Amino acid sequence: TLSVASTLSNIAGVYNSQGKFKEALVNMEKVLEIQLKSLGPSHVRVAATYKNMGNVKQQLGNFEKALELYEKALEIELKRLGNGHGANTKYNVALLYRRQGNNSQ
Image (cartoon, rainbow, N blue to C red):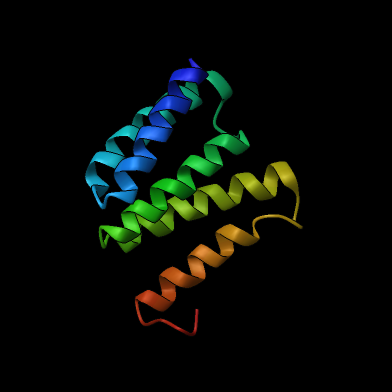
């Protein structure tokens, strides 16, 4: 249920704050699984989870996967909320490129 997903998300946040990124990711993957079943693949909560997972992947140095997750989140945000949204996700993508030394992107 969504309350379980919320609790798992909170646990993931604690792990993330502690620098235990792999543990955080395990919980986020469970959150995503619940959200996809309960809310469907184009819900804004799913987008938020993709962004959170992207942040963790970036911390783990998996930039390609982080970018893929950010792009999924952005696609949902733009589809569901319109072109005026998604600034936070675009910012995350820009930071990712900068961290990779690709300032032109």
